[in-house]
Length: 258
Image (cartoon, rainbow, N blue to C red):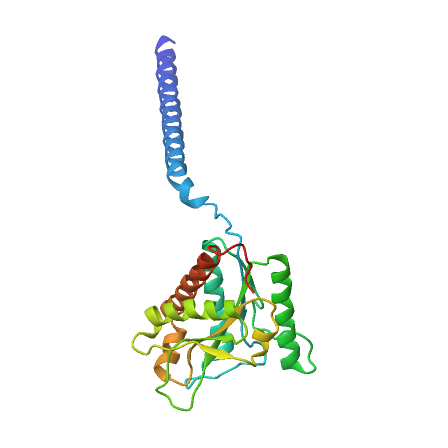
């Protein structure tokens, strides 16, 4: 009887020992996870929960064309409407990182406005969106993204167009063109151009520019324009020009952009 009792006693001690070991292991793992979470949380907090301070300025980005209006078609079949939207979204992201309030006239491959008289209603809808944004924030500008084409395949480069009666539009074009020449155009430097009949520049009620980002008629530039790196370079150059415009405007005597 005593031998049997001792066997049960040893068996019970063994079981209790295993339970105790398991309990200690669980506690150790829990404390390790807690320490790791605290460490990770402390290190991640400054970047993961970064708050972007708004700078008070607004940019309306107009990716030209869309839907059954492809715009220019490249030598390799690239559609202008697709590039305009891709570059427009990249530009939006970078502007928001700098604290701008940003709107897109279109976020998908669609035309705007009614079906009848499609082109003019599309343009009117874009102008209405831009006007509404400008009414909400007087410190607004408009950037319309497009691609160019020319009979000669060797012509290339990004170029800004502004409405000839808009002094602020001219300034935006000046600052953006400068950055495009520095970072995108290289030896093929281009000059900004005045215009007196671009519908969206005449009817947007805020200063703006049309940016022809490159020539789809140039096979090499068409290929570049499809590349993510080149689109990012275009977006960053445009942002730098916009930054400079608003920085110079803030030095004036409280006048709003016209």
